[in-house]
Length: 88
Picture 1: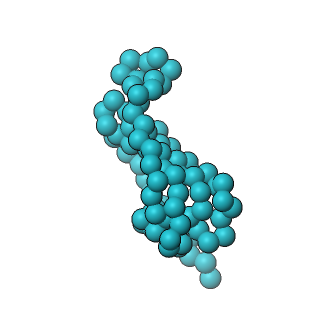
Picture 2: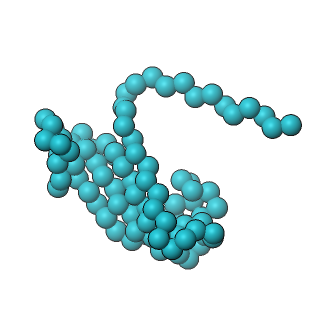
């Protein structure tokens, strides 16, 4: 349990462990099989995922100490997603 700047309802829960890189393929397509990475997940008081930190090689060309951080900052807000333009 950690706190987030002492704000009301700011308790954060962190869970850490080691997972196989290929279990992350839905998040990182092309993940190499047979590698292990450190995964740390941070949840807020409402049990929403706030951050995922992946440390270690996931893709074949990664450095051994690469760190990827996915931060989720806003919830229950409208968002517009525009598809990418086609490449000729």
